[in-house]
Image (tube, rainbow, N blue to C red):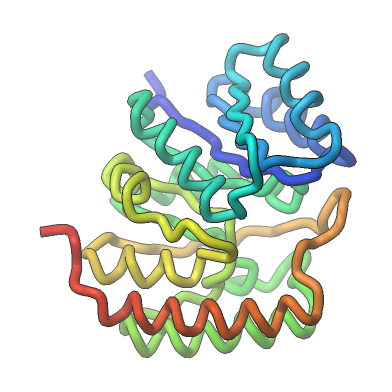
Length: 241
């Protein structure tokens, strides 16, 4: 019997591609539960998910009344998964960048490596979509910074394609960074609290629809905000005894 597994998907204004993303997941991985958090979308995202959920009891819609941002939406999904006895969770984006055929690779690493968090990295084998030049510069910055802080090289700190053990899932339910762009800080928090982090190579795709929420101006804000949150997290006392 397969462990009860949830895919956690925050969604914001993804009407252009969300139906295809749901269909691809439910066709390839019909046994998993798809927990979709509509983060106050202004388009038809919630309606499309609701229609899919009415036809498939493995598709679950959590419809937030206001936009909480990526961190708050993801933590909402973690809370649901933790309180409904899921053993594993995989976080995936709603824009189609994380191909469904790569999901088993993350779950396999959880089991074989006895890991708590598995990060799907674009940069271990450097295949598929590698992001834009400016974003790669930011990714390189956080690779160096986080490696110094946790003494472990994580090549893709900003990857949102991640799998979690039950132990890590329960931790994230209470301590996930609930603000925009939380992934680099999550790496620090998991490492500082003794969770085993591993990376596996994955091949990601380009965004399948919609547009990114990170404009050039927001990118500067992102770098500063995440830099300070990462440094503060590194000096925070562990919460896991």
